[in-house]
Structure formats: structure tokens, C-alpha cells
Image (cartoon, rainbow, N blue to C red; front, side):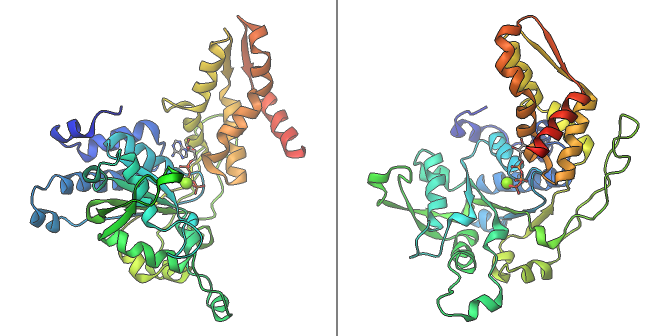
Length: 355
Ligand SMILES: Nc1ncnc2c1ncn2[C@@H]1O[C@H](COP(=O)(O)OP(=O)(O)OP(=O)(O)O)[C@@H](O)[C@H]1O
Ligand SMILES: [Mg+2]
């Protein structure tokens, strides 16, 4: 998928529909988020293609804020987008940064990492995408904690303050060679004006997901979706949560992701080209073993994830656990077809719960 971005530059722009279609192959559900991200990315590309500064000023950069429960696909969407766009892309974890001058990374390192992804090509980096994860973890600490001595909020409010200049687009001194310990004191000027920032967080305290339980839990074999949806977070809630008004103002496009339903999780396991069940089938195929997992077994796994509220996040671990013994024995079971059914999975899950 990776071609030279310089070549991509001369190709016609991807349309929102094409970007959506690409995301759709890998990301299950979340249609609204996929559409919003596709439009934002398209505008980003258009803006980058403006030959004149005047044209660039006209098309404003619209940084995004993704909100949604754990394992709903926030990071997954952003990573998939980067593959699709072929622009440099980096994921930063907001919790690793501190206000400048304190122990921890300065926010300019995010841009330094982007530069690294762009092979130190400044011009290319200036059109890249920075994904800032765990943004809810840098909310301002409660007022009470701030009254005590020595409680300067260097990891929360301080980081938000430092990020303001990156988000709005300024020239910053980014460290070159972020990956080299012996040579990280060279700096280069990078204009963040055209860099697209996508911030994401779970904001779990906001209770953005309605409490509706999955309907038809395990009943009638198929089509047992859930009705759980996310509601929109209000500006006031986000302010109360501890995000600064200036910070929020620089993330104007907001989209909520829904918790994945049982049907969604079933698809996550089987449908995308890199789905976990396909992966294990391919692995075992190399030993001459055909692996089959019944639909009932997979639905049980999906229900387990919903119950534990981990979304798609724990699917891989569960499937790995279930296939553990088979992986060990596979080379001696050449030519066999191994079928995992609901009873087998139920037993394994019960075993894990007591272990
Ligand atoms: N909508 C989805 N479609 C397909 N796969 C998904 C989806 N959501 C999650 N996954 C799978 O689950 C894994 C974890 O998801 P991801 O890292 O995107 O969660 P997240 O929303 O960022 O959660 P967290 O808030 O915990 O970081 C992904 O690597 C991906 O394989
Ligand atoms: Mg994530």
C-alpha cells in the first residue's frame, strides 16, 4: 500500500467516498465516524494541494476529536486512515507528555516523531497527521487538588496549554532524530499549520453510552444486535470534564463512536482482511490443520466482550487463549480439521474466569 507520497501527490485526490470505502474494509460499524473522518481527511488533502498561502488560509484546518468507549475503534480508524492517505502519520499518547521543562516529553516531540516518519523530509511532515490518544487523561485536575502547594498540573492543564500552539498552527522547534539517543539535540523548524491533528479519548466518566443492554442476548441464533448508542457530548460537559475552552476550540470537528454490538464484534472477528480468526486459520493452515470456529462459538466470545465492556479490545486475547493448546499440538495433527464450538468456548471462558 505504501507508495512514494511524492508520486501520490500527482494523482487525483481521493474522494470522501473512496476514503470511506477503504476504511469500511477494515473498520466495522462506526459509519458516522468513518464519514466524518473521510470528509476531514479529504479537506486536509485539498488544503495541502492549495498552491498559494491565500488558498490555504481560506480552507481552514479542522482538527478532530473522537470520543468513544474502549475497543470501539478510535485508534484503529486513525491507523487505517493513515494507510489509506499515504501521508506521514504518528500516534502520540497524551499521558507521556508534560509541560515544557518537566520530566517527560515536550509536545514538540510529537512533531519530531512525525518528521521521523517522513524520513526527515520537512515539507512532507508539514502535511502529515498526528493522532493524540488518551486525550481525556490530560484533563485539568480537580480544583481542590490545585489549591495545595506543589500541585502544579504539569501533566494535565500544562500539556493542554503546550498543545495549543501546535493545534492552531505555528512554527515550532521539533527535535530531529527522536529515535537516536546520542544525537537528539538538533532541532528543525516545522510549521504545524497544515498538520492535521486527531485527538481521541474514552471520556468514560461522561457516560456517553446509553445503558441499554444487548437485546435478544444469545437468543434465536442470529441477528441479535444491540441497541446501544452513544449520545453527543455537550461543550459544557467537556469543559466540566477539564478540557480548556481554548483547547476544545482548536478541535472543532467532534464525533462519537458507538459501542460495538454483538453482530459488530462477530464481524470484527471474521470480516476484515486482517481479522483475527482469519489470521489463526492461516497460521494453522501452515501446519496442515483446518481450523473452524462455529458461529455459536464466536457469538459467545462477542457476548463475553460486551459483558466485560472491553469492546473489540480483548477479542484477540480471547481467541489466542482458546487456540493456545491447538497451536501447541498443530504440527502433530497435520491433515485434521479442528472445530471449536460454543461448548468448548464456554468451558474455556469459564476456566479463564476462575483462573
Ligand atoms: N470498529 C472496529 N472494526 C474492526 N476492528 C476493530 C474495531 N474496533 C476495534 N477493533 C479492533 O480492536 C483493536 C482495539 O481497538 P482500538 O485500539 O481502535 O480501540 P480504541 O477505541 O482506541 O480503545 P481505547 O480507548 O482503549 O484506546 C484494534 O486493533 C482492532 O483490531
Ligand atoms: Mg486507542
